[in-house]
Image (cartoon, rainbow, N blue to C red; front, side, top):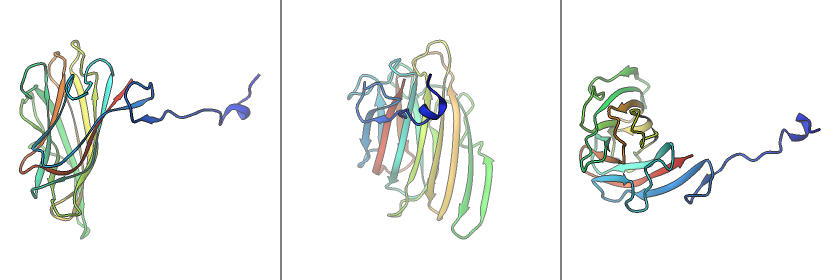
Length: 205
């Protein structure tokens, strides 16, 4: 009979995969390099994107996304089967910050960056700087977007170096207030475009 001592190190942790369909815990579906785009979209069935009931959870990584304009806001919206990104959303946005000079604020709720059953774009990261060394990184989770029974929940955590030499941690969560399947997600900036960085879509079985 096996004992704990003999088996405690005898296992392999799940590994992220760089190809789809390999059966690992985290499977890369598509990676998009930002290069002068005004919007970046992941649409089910388009450009090798899967965003349906193949996966119950979708994970999106934002890696050193750098905008062309200063003091811009990174945003998201969802499509619920039509042609427009206007799914109704109820969200809550919180932020905490600390400057290079040592002052700080928050954590605090931002009513201006939150929505109550709104259809407009949703803020994810705000006041992002466009100096050569400034960018933001973060992640987004979207849960069971193909469900036609329950609303689609999502949340984001982003860390950005904003225009006033400040480290800002911003957290947003909410749900698409519709029982229609969410079949696409689109990212945009409030001014200018995406100059560089990567946005990666993963599926989790």
